[in-house]
Figure (cartoon, rainbow, N blue to C red):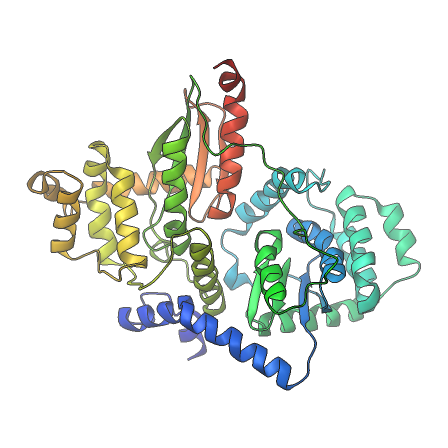
Length: 453
């Protein structure tokens, strides 16, 4: 029974109807609002302070970024902070760990300068230094945790053993004490429905890293917890890319979507805007959903992904409404038509329409009448396109797309690749969270050409 629920998204362990019902429950805006109201009523009834948990993992690059914001959060809001030291991620929630570790380090190297945070590390810290860092923070009380953790994180990612040794002269925990501290931390984290470090938790909601910190700020502000002297966002990005860009040159943008990905659905509107507002050649590189690549998603991760994607969709004006998962035959049928439709120049429009049907309109995209109407609305010949229905040649195309995506240390969707127009100089990034970084990279490559016009 436990395994059944842990893998509820898997087509092998649950019916499509139950899966769809659960997905709609996790993404529901009405349930989201009700949960917030009930949580606040309970907090006030119990006369509890605004208690914010922060999960810190010493060798997580994102935790290095997020710890820089914790002190500012404490001084800007009337909150009680509960720092929680955590250890290894749940193996069930961590797909492709080698790619994951490479990507996380590279991603933080790229985005840290936009937050004005120093991060020069080219590799992960040694096990010895990680153990020392955990020993220090296992001995620190909650009141001193943020200050010491900030110092420890900077020293750890610099490989500065001297500084860590100095700090450990004041704060030191034995191996057994560290083990127990991390065990308790992981239990608290898991109990809150999360599985990584670098996240905040407040009253039934999770906020991962600096990417989601604005949501926590908005919520605390709405509840009257912001201190009157503080008005600025805690960590804002320093971006240069303009809304629109004109250039005599172009770059290639490769887009790796999946038909069962809520984050891919959320990304479509902004990718369409980049295509319309920036000088790019957009290439569609669809991939099979993770579940159809034999990866299982535990319930807590699925719940977070759906609730978070729904939150992001509302933020970017591409709201998830009624979900009908296309896992299985619906996805295979839809993918079978993609090569011909893409060749006709309508690949993006086709994928966008399929995702809208699945995540907004609650339509089974495997329905023949739906596919016929969609192809006709794209001003393509259904009689010609339908010849590829149930064909197999799309499978190799999607397999090649996955391998290309993996070559950039990306395993999930949506992923992206930017190259120069001749296909050289590849730049990979993963997630709809990094669409702003795509624009920055495009602008950087075309800035000189843009200045000539």
